Length: 186
Image (cartoon, rainbow, N blue to C red):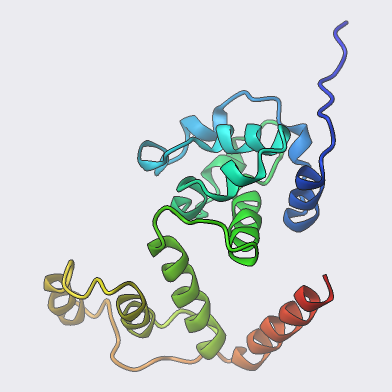
């Protein structure tokens, strides 16, 4: 019987596992996560390659990849993983680490979208699409690339001009506050 794969524990691997709450070291590189990824063709490296970079302690390469910002967190990879590694949570953890460590981000639009999305959730307890997209457009400077769709979406009732606050908006804001306190303790 073959011995199980044992990765050389690195501080990077340990930190990613701690932040994501999943056992990255359980990944045995079957690539099922990559073959099921809907945005995989647009990534500079596949999700399985990101996992391998973590195994090898290649922090800079992992944190500066476009892949972590293109990940849609749809969890297709997570559901396909035979080892129950939560790859979507790993990508979230890597994005947080990249921002904290001021890693060079190849295309900052992913970070800008992430900040706009989380800001909308924080303010309203849920996503207010119109406000989120306005914030994203201001951050990215990409004002006109999809402006023709706005009228159609408004006409079909897909976008609202005013936010609908969640009944649990105060609880969501409290979660953000507690999360920020935890981050300061690290």
